[in-house]
Structure formats: structure tokens, C-alpha cells
Length: 373
Image: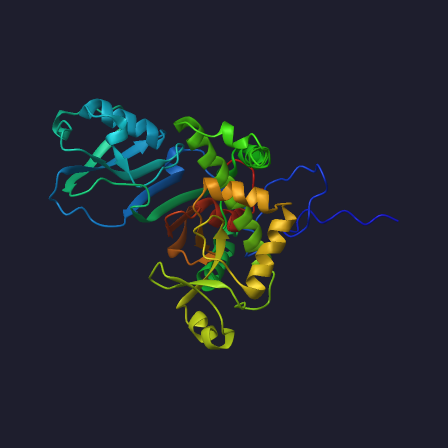
């Protein structure tokens, strides 16, 4: 009698030899509550995002800061258009992050002192200049505190507002699992599939000869990020399956800071965790990742085993990605829901940079995870 096949929903189940590994489907934290239903509307006005900067422009300095709205265009489209009309190189335009294409988004860009003044610009129809200032440094990726969202759900069945209020209340109380969204893994998970092929191919003897060049560096970064994200998502599900609020050896972040440390005495740290002073984290594996120990390290190891990763794969990943820690859960700020008309719900909330609004929306709609929104 043969052993039964491993449960593919189990993030710690080891793959069969040659088995295709698909992106792990995140848990729905509010699955015990009735689904709200509906879907994100298809109009640009149904998905509005506004950046909340890490710092305010001082009004002085050599760098021009411009706050722009774009409609139905990528951030790269916006950068190209601004660079063209300001007579600077696209690589000299700074941005804190990339924003959705099929949406109305508002974000800051920075330009060098040589830029043509905004009053002389001619922007395309998809872009509007809202505000300008100056600052002493160029905007760079990560110079972002949070994003404010206003998302409209359509085709919501009757009684949706009451159901939505219950979900919103639960997320405000218990928090939202900080999963990476399906966008991270490409359409239908294709980026992850390519990433896993790259990771295993690059462990071969001639792998190093294939690395190099700017284009390949960008592709390697994209693929390594997909692998890191898959590991994190699987660890998050495994951690949510543990009854213990804190594990010995778990890496936690001190609230309001970027400082991380390893929990050595659970009884000593548990009150601080329950008060919200400590936040549990998961691994974004790389050489700079603060390593978990004891029980938490064992859980991470089981997740890696479930992906069939050994030392060779981890070494390749370490060459491509520096590594970090990421909070396992987050508490959306200013989370509200309203019903402007029957069948419509409007969600308003603020999420920290790097978190996925579609994960919060999925808690209400229960849409298939890899389904494009």
C-alpha cells in the first residue's frame, strides 16, 4: 500500500519528485464570518490610491518634488512623460513606489535641479499636476509610509453592508494577515513558476556563467522576490496554524521601530506582545535575514522542506536577495465601509507600504486568489 499524496494546501507538505509547485493560496482570516460577495468595479474610479509619504517635502532644496494624479497608466508611463516634458533623463526621476495601472493614483515624483519648471510642462491627458515643492534629496524606493485606498465593490448581494461591517470589525480587532498578493507571482502564477525553474537551474555548475548584466540583474531580482514571497506566504499560513501566540526563538519587531530581536523567554515577552508592543515576523530569506531559533526555526525549516529547498537553492537565493523580516499581521488604519447605493460598497483604509489592498478586499469578496482583480 502506497502512502497517500501530500495535502497540497499544506504549506509544509513536501512535493513529489517532478511535481509542479503552485503559488500557495493564503488563508481567509474571516472565513468564520459570512462572505460579503461582490467584486471590485471595472471603472478607474473604483480603485483610488494615494501615497502617504515617509516625510514631508521641506520646501527647500535642489530637488523638485511634484505630486501628480495618473489615470489608467503605469508609474513608468508617468515617469517617462514627466522626464520628457521636464527635459531630464527618466533615471533621474525619483519615485517611492510603483502604483496600479487600472486605477486613479496619486503619488510624488522628484526631479533634479536641471528640470524645466512645471509651468512650462505639457503633460499627457492621463496625468495632472496637483502640487509642487522642493526637498534636499531624491525620492527613492521605500520613501513611503503608507497608501490610502478607496475601493468600490459592485454587484454586492442584499445585506452586504451588515456583513461587511462584521468583517471590518474583525479585521480591526485581530488584524489582517500580511500575505503577498497574487500580483507578486505574475498572471496565473507564471512568475513564480519561472522563479522556481531559475532557482533550480542556477544551482548547476554553469549557473554563475549565466548571471550578469543589468537586464539579467533586474530579472533575477524579480524572480528572487517571487521566491521570497512564496516562502513568506507559506510560513505565514503555517504560523497561523500554531496555537501559541509566541514561539521560542521567534523574531519580533519592536512597535514603532525597525528593530528586531529573537524571543528567548516567551513568558517574559508575552505581555508586551499582547499589548501590541511586539509584532511577529516571517522570513524574506537572504544573508541579512535575522535568523529565527528553536521552535520558530524548526517551523521555517519545515516550510522550506515543503518546497523541496536545500542548501544549494538557499545559496542561490542568498546571492540574489539580501533578505529581511516582514510583519505577519497588520492592522489597517481608518478602515471604514459605506453603502452609497444598493449593490455598492465603498471601502476606505490605509495600509503600510508593501502591503496588498487586494488581500483586504478578498476577506470580503472571497474571490479566487489568482483571479485577476
